[in-house]
Image 1 (cartoon, rainbow, N blue to C red):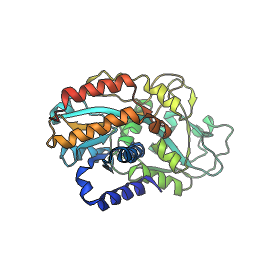
Image 2: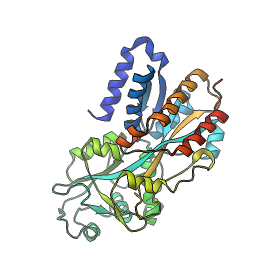
Image 3: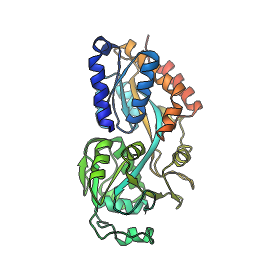
Image 4: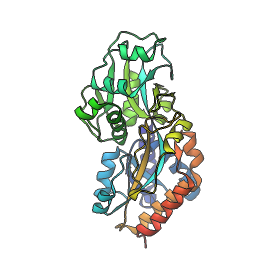
Length: 337
């Protein structure tokens, strides 16, 4: 069962619950953290009887939903600046961290065998490197038997925090990418086939021979996709692991206003170059104070009880010092009484 199917099944279960719907916490946004939000929601429901109705629709849509006040919280992998938060009356904090991986479907090449660097990855998504046996890929993989076949690029079609972080990384490592395409939730892709959500990209790559795409790591594992190792900022070849995500995340400065942090292309020999945090957005002066209070209880529970579940899906929990700071932010900035 893929993650979108899980979301639909959860929605159906909520609908069947009848009067229980009103008690459910409502949120919408990023597909990046959906695997862990879904797992937390199941455990929280069993423990407390309270449900979470989360629409996994992409970061861009999640920001729009919270701005429109149709949900209690929005979820986004695109951090909003302190200025934007103040303008909209929103409070933001990081919930969990994880990694983005380049997934591919090339016969005879296993996970971790293919090595890419940022420049080559950018050139693939620019359409400059268009065959698997291109000299740039062969230089990084002298011992691999690479087919002389066209590369099918798969990328997001919706407004996406995963895209924001992926294109942020490409903009840091490729001047041409930065100039021609740039970094945003949605960009004018030079090449490729669009798919909606992390699950859409994962499904498309899984079904398309000689393709490449980018997804949050849990989707790669869930769909049994092959993913590449990467040369990081230090020039070291690393694989996507909890340790590599943590090495990158250790550079974060969570004391900045609004917890604004982008974790791509971090220094360190062990750092995974495509690491990202995912954020929650709520109103400082919520219309429904009771619903906002219930949402904060869920997030507090997740910080206290959800670390092991996060790690099982290869997400990085927020450090205790950061969650303590976040709780003080809730107390000072979100009026639930």
